[in-house]
Figure 1 (spheres, rainbow, N blue to C red):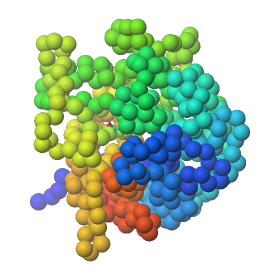
Figure 2: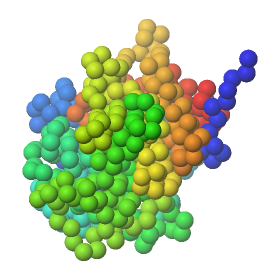
Figure 3: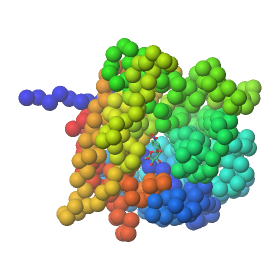
Figure 4: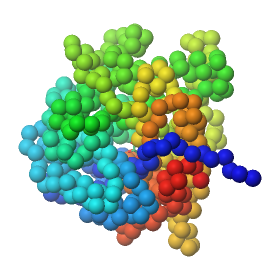
Length: 448
Ligand code: PNW
């Protein structure tokens, strides 16, 4: 019998992703200042086992080897991030030439190995000096980011054509002040959190502006956000309509605001007195047309239609397949988050900028890492992505999170998301079974 070919479109972008604070280490090298995460991770009890970002995967020194390994696996596209504390250590003002030089060396090495960089300007590692000046609550942060984005695009714009502005707004402007499990990690009242979101949206706008202003012709830019996913329990017209309502309810505040050029009236009504202060012209900047939307896709909640409010978001029952303490397996997330972003907000070119599986794992007696759970997870998610493409959702690429095990934020080094295993004692990386499988997927442009 012949296999049904789960082939992807021609020119589909296959890549891997990682972020500066999670892999680079060298936390105080060559003029880098402390980030909020460097400070937060030192507060006892915040990060599992007291792990810090000090050394991480020592990618700062080992990047050339890492890119050689990527190239050997056939990786052609790599989503990385640039550390603000290396470039402008005090957050504003003096630019650190050694920091700029580091990423030039990094890009040189990627070029040598035939890997195309897709840098993100900001992946949560805010210079502590900016946090001390009020962080995302203060309008000054918007100017600071604007200056930083200008510096980046002026320095690298002649060699970098693809940019992401921010990674996952909720994880640096909302969660730190509600769940308190991410830096800077203190409670804030709802109005301040909504103001944080607004400032981050403005920062994104400046990222787009900087690329338009200083980037080379044909440069592409967009945000990478973890939209809050919802999936219909059953794909009936009623549950799908309920899911659309729930998606708008959850996403009007960020990607909705950015893609439609304003906060929806239902969203503002819901906020009441906790609305953010919005200045005239803010949305001209926030909704500057981007070239693509990055979606970090991990899980969703199931939704069904309900009399009251039109939708009901269901809790997961005990025993539902879950990993890393929060990652429920919902492969249809791939289908619905992308489809709804296109349907409801008109998203045009969508990239899955992250998707992955985290767990505790160690090599077996033969030194192999047979991560069949990760492989199966990725394959299920990718088949749902393929379904969305088949239904006409404009998806252009996919980046697996992550190239190698790294600092998994408040879970420290114990939770592993890598396609490659990191031995933190020796800094040796070993491709897991999933890396070998993904290598074939990329090479053949189909699910194998
Ligand atoms: C992302 N969610 O975080 C981050 O961008 C990565 O740095 C991180 O290592 C990776 O996913 C794995 O955790 C997420 O609630 C935070 O859906 C929250 C969610 C998803 C991803």
